[in-house]
Image 1 (cartoon, rainbow, N blue to C red):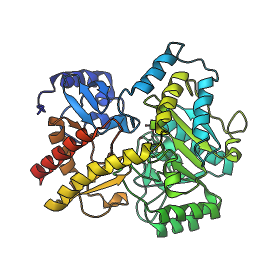
Image 2 (image 1 turned 60 degrees about the horizontal axis):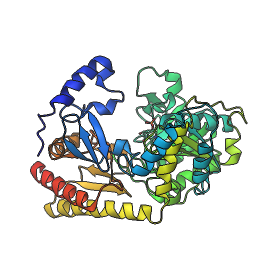
Image 3 (image 1 turned 135 degrees about the horizontal axis):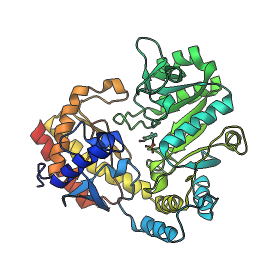
Length: 432
Ligand SMILES: Cc1ncc(COP(=O)(O)O)c(C=O)c1O
C-alpha cells in the first residue's frame, strides 16, 4: 500500500505550481479541490499505469479524461508520432496525413460527409454552433443541464430560475446578452422539450446534446427520448448537434449515432480522435459543410489545425479501433470488471449503482437510475471523496471528482481489472 501522506514531491511541485498558474493548474478539475491531497504530478504513463514524481504507480481509470482508449504510450501511436516528428511538426499547409485520417474516418462513419479538424473539443463545439447559426440564419441555441460542451461563452450557461428556460452564465466574463441566446432544458424530460419547442422552436438555430452525457455523472438517455428530440428538431427546422467529444470512437467507431441509430445534423469530436494529441473536429453533411469558409460565409480557421503530428497520432489510434471486434472485446472486458463490483454491492446492499455505457463507467452513490443532473445528491460526493483517497493509497487512480466518469482502456488487462475490482470492493466495505 502506498502512503497518502508520502506524496512529498507532488506536494512540493504543487506549491511551486501555485506560484506559476492560477490554482496551480492549467485546467481546474486537476486541482483536486473536491478530493483529498495534492494533485499527483505524473511523470510517465505506460499501458494502463501512470507513475508519479514520488515513484508511486497507479492503475489509471481517468485515461487523460478519455482520449487514451489504447492506454498510455501505445507503441503504434508512439511510432507514428516519432516518424512524423522527424520530418517536422507543422507546415501550415495541407498534408497527405490530413487526407489519410479524413478518408479513414469519413469512409467508415455513415453519419457524416465532410469534416474539419481543429485543436480541441471546445473549438469543435464553438465552430459547430457558429456553423449552425450561419446555416439557419437564427441565433438561439438549446442545451441541457448536466451536459458540458467545453468552455465557449455561449455554452457556459445553466438554467435560469423558475420556469424561465433562458440561461444564466456559469462563469464571470460572459455578457448576459450572450447567455440569453442559450436556452437550457433538463435532460430526460420529453414534456419540457415539447414546451421549449412550442415556445422557441422558430428562433432556435440548434440543439446541442451529449447523446451519452458523461460530464456530470453518466446520465444515460433512452433511445426514445433522443428520437423525440431528433423529430422535434426536424419539424422545427432546428439543427441537431451531437457532441461526441467523449462518446465518439469510444462507444463504437460511429459513436452514439450508430448506437442509437440517429442521424444528427452536425457531430463534434475530440479526445480519442487525436490519439492523445490535441485534436478536435466538427463534421456534417456536404450541404451544411459548404457554408464553412473558404467555400461559404461561416469563418473558421486555426494555425495548428490538422498539424501532421496530431494527424499521425489520431490516424494510428483509429487504425487500431477499426480492427475486428475491437469494441466488442473492450466493452465486454469493462462489463466483466463492473459486474464483479456490482455483484458485491448488491450482495452487501450498499446504496450505490454503477452506470455504464460501453467502456465508460460512473459510480453513483444512490440506488435509482440517474438520468438527469437533479437526481444527484451533492451530499453523496462525500462517499466518492473517501473512495478516491482509499484507492489512491492502494495504487488506483480515478479522476478527482465524483461527477467525472471513469474509462477502461484496451491496456487494462484482465488481471489488472480483477485486482481493481477486489480493491474497490474492499474500499467500499471500509466506507459503508
Ligand atoms: C462532451 C464534451 N464536449 C466538449 C469538451 C471540450 O473539449 P476540450 O476539453 O478538448 O476543449 C469536452 C471536454 O471534456 C466534453 O466532454
